[in-house]
Length: 248
Image 1 (cartoon, rainbow, N blue to C red):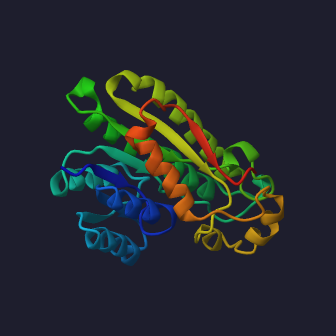
Image 2: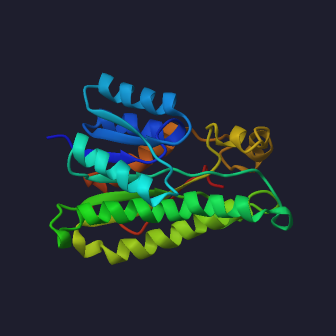
Image 3: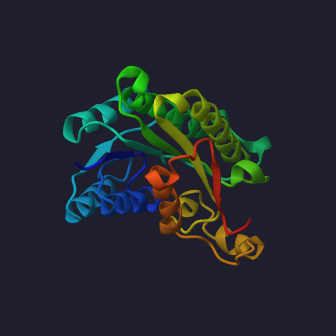
């Protein structure tokens, strides 16, 4: 029987790459999307083309009702959840802290932090052996920005990912004896559309010289790490913060 995974933010980039790798590994996969319905449906279609069930669900992960509805859709259409990838996140426009609006700050924190908590909460409720579940694994997508701070541009984003790191450590210890492993990956500069959305597409070229490997990473490279953390090959790994950042 196929395992079941849910990936938040699966309409492109790291989320979509992870969905396809999981499908190749035998998973049925649900993905959420916010604005890019075509991307979400394309990911689900590609999963089905690999011979597995694919589901795309609209959800704003900052809204509790949307998160609950997404998990209920997976329950109904795919079955009992085995894996969660908390990938949905936003950067927002670049800004010094002195110029940051409360609206921008609250939106980044709501999606990146509250959304991560809500999705993990729903996953734990389903996976925990304490509640009659069969266990599972959660991977939170953090960022190297959590330890770099991103001064002058994205301190608000970096702080939100610092919260994800702390959440990962705490939740991992909280549910370790309930059959659930919780880890995080911290991507560095990765070739996805997130930089263009933040209005700083040229930022990639300026950062590459600071990366010891002298290149940016790919969504597939991050996805490979996520899939490993979800797999039985990582059965004794929990509470890990794994950098995928080319040495930066």
